[in-house]
Image (tube, rainbow, N blue to C red; front, side, top):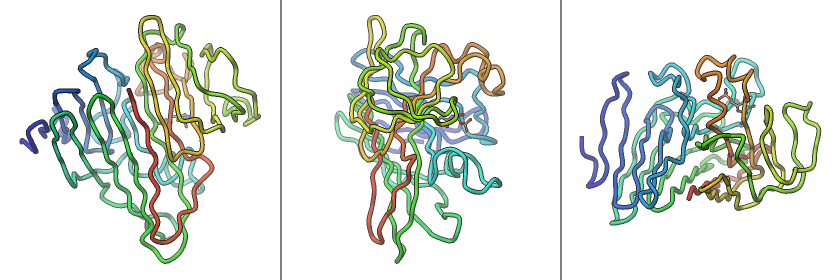
Length: 278
Ligand code: TA6
């Protein structure tokens, strides 16, 4: 089904609605399950920016391992044990609100089926993708209630790398909280290389990071975040995860625009969490 000049919708072999964008600048695939970007490839170099696990479950029974999962309205473990980690929008159906094609840019806006918070509060959520020479992902939270509400989240992007051993991450600085080291606060290393299981909440919310490797680099821009999360499960954790291959960790690195400390949103106000992938 054609949604606009450059945008089509189809049903995958596993019965999930998939949106495909192919415009003069880039191509992208998006699953309506999770409002989840699956792939993004700018045409200037035809290099896939996002990593997708070969064992990702794509039938709607669980969140997809790879691409850009949307974590909202909390990051990480939930306050109540019965609730899922990383919120409840990455495993529900989303709907398309609007599609626009300009010559070089396609804009898609989506919303999840429901966005209630535990405790009865309701925030409205919208995901906007601007697909062109760069991919801009805007996650917009709006408080239509008469009281302030607190939320968190992340654009949990999985970047594709040639080999994790060759990667240097540039742009991070200051202190980080080490989730594999009892949440101890450590100083950001320089050079920033990944040599073991890494799960860090970088507390200095810088606005530009680069993933550098021989012959290529990926620029990542951020705004509206309070931290940047860096995650690689390494070999043992990968082997334990049903939707990752044992050596899957070698080709990926998560660098996430995150709200880990929480944001208090006043009534009538909006907040936009942005990640720009170049
Ligand atoms: O963002 C890093 C992280 O919170 C890790 O602690 C981690 O286990 C990961 O996300 C993946 O979480 P998931 O719920 O998708 O398995």
